[in-house]
Length: 219
Image 1 (tube, rainbow, N blue to C red):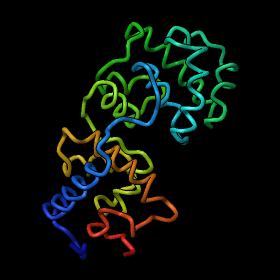
Image 2: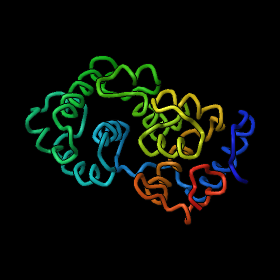
Image 3: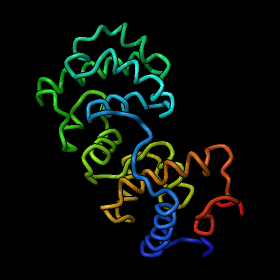
């Protein structure tokens, strides 16, 4: 299939279906690369992953969770100590503040338990829609949206699935193209494909399993 000219929605949906099926076969796991023991640790790890690689977060969190294990621990943490532990993840001032305030909010509003709804998660300090989608999909198996990080945004644009640049608008355009039960898995497939093949600077189009269906392919 050669992608040329303007597509109808149905044509785009058909092409997206082929891309989705190929990528889900290539990347069968829908589990995050972040290491965590419970939903709260996952929440902290996802906050730390902003503008940072999962690999770097996984280096930091063992020592972090050995020092602070629960929302109560983080809520009473010394911010300077916390900043020191997460310094290498970048933007550590804001991340430390958000994690402490998030832990306090969890204790005050939810008894220290990570909530299972988009609305409740979105109200927590440091939690945006992307983070909430990760928590819901990863920890609770709920598909309430599509995770749009830098990889998902880049690949969905390159593949001609959206022309939007805002994450929320990208998500809204992708959701009708993918069955809801596969929203979270599709996000992960795009993320893994972005890391392995469709890199920002030099995509490996010759090695791409969906290049025939991608208008940006150089092959």
